[in-house]
Amino acid sequence: MPDKTEEAIQKSTDYYNSSDTDNYYRAIWGGESIHVGIFDQPGISIRDAARRAVTYLAGRLDSIGPDKTVIDLGSGFGGPIRQLVTDYGCKGVALNASALELTAMAKFNEAEGLADKITPLEGNYEDIPMEDAQVDIAWSQEAFLHCGDRAKLMREVFRILKPSGEFVFADPMATPTAPAEVLQPMLDRANLVSFGTVEGYLADAKAAGFEDRGYEDRTEDFLTNYRTIVAETRARHDELKQEISEAFLEKIGNGMQYWVDGGEAGHMVWGSFHFVKPA
Ligand SMILES: C[S@@+](CC[C@H](N)C(=O)[O-])C[C@H]1O[C@@H](n2cnc3c(N)ncnc32)[C@H](O)[C@@H]1O
Image 1 (cartoon, rainbow, N blue to C red):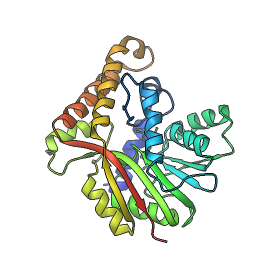
Image 2 (image 1 turned 60 degrees about the vertical axis):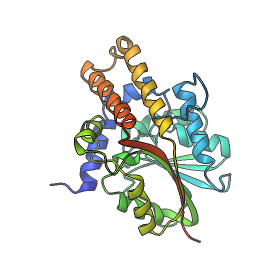
Image 3 (image 1 turned 135 degrees about the vertical axis):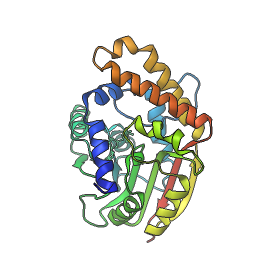
Image 4 (image 1 turned 90 degrees about the horizontal axis):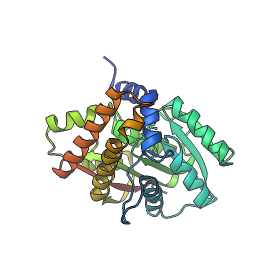
């Protein structure tokens, strides 16, 4: 029986290294990012909302600029790290478990002239292939839902941060009272082992040694995000099925609707955390 970390990483890489997953996220999520957007303007596109989420999360940091190195944990196609490097002049490290996505990211980085500012790193955020105290900022959007052992994750992030380093992330989470039978189809839609909870992340971060700078709930954005994604998936079904299997489209369409239903029923929340490693 594999341990929690091995099972989670296997399920995650199976999911993201599949061409159906890859084609679907590129087509639906604006091409460069796969995270919940900030829908604070009427009619905003999924792509623009995704960019606003990066700006929102960066706004939670005390400081980001040319003297900082940021690691994006679970970096996808690299949309967030490219935006950070471009907007704030920082240096980037993009850690991802999916080799397929890292290859796609390298092409985007090259095309945008950012290849020398972003270091790709293949690996698992529960066992980061990096020496201690190397980065100023640890960052993540919608990647820790794939985690097998969140206490281990927190210890790893603490280890690679420099003293006074900052850690911000956003993630969809279950509420502590969410029934297991409601959560299971929600987990199945993205090959997940378990959801985190706000309370669990706060406790694991504290145990790892972090100072807590506050959790901000933005569940309304999560709901708007997934309602928009479900509608877009249905509206573009005939176009999507040219490149993506019908079985995948059926599973993901239904699965995302479970996420909307779960959120509306109060079983899911979404928001951002800010932690600091003591000096
Ligand atoms: C929903 S996508 C988010 C991608 C990116 N953060 C963004 O906002 O566009 C989740 C990402 O986490 C990565 N991932 C999942 N489990 C991981 C792990 N244990 N270590 C590193 N990356 C992981 C996946 O390969 C995928 O790129």
